[in-house]
Length: 59
Image 1 (cartoon, rainbow, N blue to C red):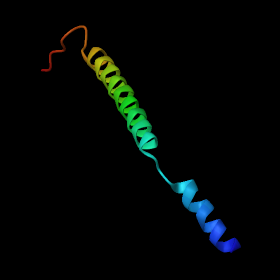
Image 2: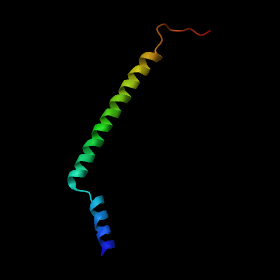
Image 3: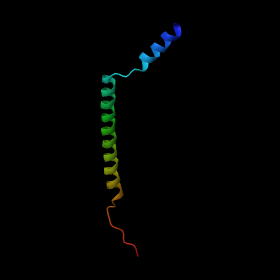
Image 4: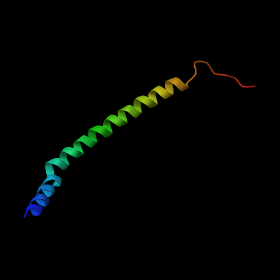
């Protein structure tokens, strides 16, 4: 009996409700947006850093 109760407790602990899934998807969406924003900022910095003020001539 005690073993069955432990299994039931574990099953309830890992049970995922629809609200949990929706919340997880929203968190993931926010994280992806933030990552994309960071990548955009890094790309913008890369362009300004990589562009020299004067053109170099190679001989």
